[in-house]
Image 1 (cartoon, rainbow, N blue to C red):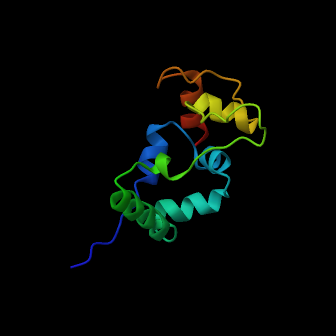
Image 2 (tube, rainbow, N blue to C red):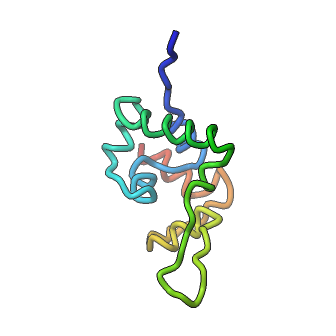
Length: 112
């Protein structure tokens, strides 16, 4: 019997303290795309394919891509934190996300 994949994107997004809009901007897709992925309407076949790649090659998702710099002088470094991703995308947040009960988390809860 074949199992249907149930996306964990919403759980992981909430655990990271991100809204659907924030995640969509970080990933480079529309907010409705995030909604479709979270509901399982679309996108899971791509994720399942990536999982099969990793199992077949005995690797992690990050291993599938090599980041190269356009410049010949220095190699590109992978971002290592959410704040670095925000900085690279030019979406630096004006608030600190150092703890789960931070002011930013409280603002998100109030606005929803």
